[in-house]
Image 1 (cartoon, rainbow, N blue to C red):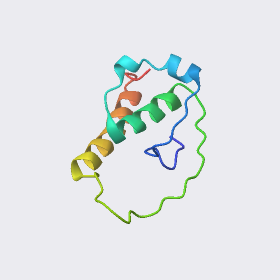
Image 2: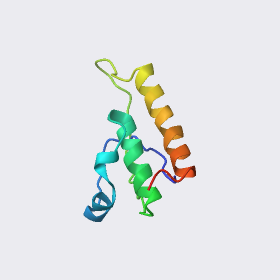
Image 3: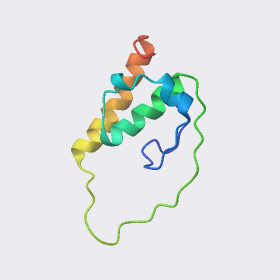
Length: 90
């Protein structure tokens, strides 16, 4: 999938993209949801355009990113790719 940051929180989807993705078949939520939506749009042949954002390190507070969240997102990437290869992702 030709995307540099699939978990960027700022997303815009054209209506036709959302109409072509069966939202009832989405397997994930959180960061993994963002990856899955990009992947499913890409598999359907839609072009993904990224607009760069400037990320600055947090100055206050604590990140909610945990090892569990990172693991879920990484696992989702592999799961979606295997599903695509096996023809289970349409």
